[in-house]
Image (cartoon, rainbow, N blue to C red; front, side, top):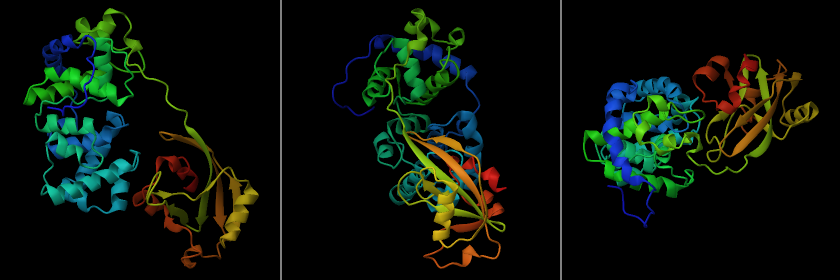
Length: 368
């Protein structure tokens, strides 16, 4: 059972929720998608898939999941992987702190649980990168614990079923839904199936961003939003704050067959990843030339190149770029550590060994 916390108000029409269990499980047995983490639902596979699926579509995750599992098949391999190798395996999924937390949690599992992922909800919550939803998903799907796992899909399904108008972006609303669903769960395989069935329904039938497929829904006759002809009014989300706008000037620097990279600081946005050199603001060509001359680099050619915009959760980067060729007779890689700001890599190494965040992927074609 979930922990007892401060008194949570009752969800309107929650009394009808136990009636969804039988038709939903029957539908799931015949309609569930075949997904690689469902084939062998071990704690490690469920954990990995749930972390990857945060902020990422199922179709996009599948090839990453397969590749990651081949490279790091268990907790021991994950705990001991080199950070650069881990970031390269994660490249393209974004939100790189998820991968760093995976490794941190794996190290703790090796140290405190002898390499065995705990299935207790509270023990899972104590691990880096694991919140209430992920802890409930691992505990129930891999261990059969009678705990609701409430993600965005489940919030959408339940708020439509019950005409709940609480803001689903608030943690208090998620707790409200957890509490309302709790009577539907019993220990064992049905708990695992019920959580997966609710997620599946939200992902494939009770969908966001458009009309849900109500005619295909096993819960149509139990859904108050369908009955009131207003499913698109749910879930309720209050407006998010505007993203901060930041301008950057990206430097696409080449010397012979080498490309300049720079490692980002160990903390902050895109921490520890490799980036293309860049400057704050939108610099003019003369300003870029002056900057590089000040670093001791000789330029043989420079021209403006492409621009791009990249959106993070709370920040938006508006980027311009310059393609720069250094003089062939200079050797920037031979400079002293104090002068040599950049790492000089081949195109092959750039593609195969270095994790380049999506924000800089727009500019890589210009370096080919």
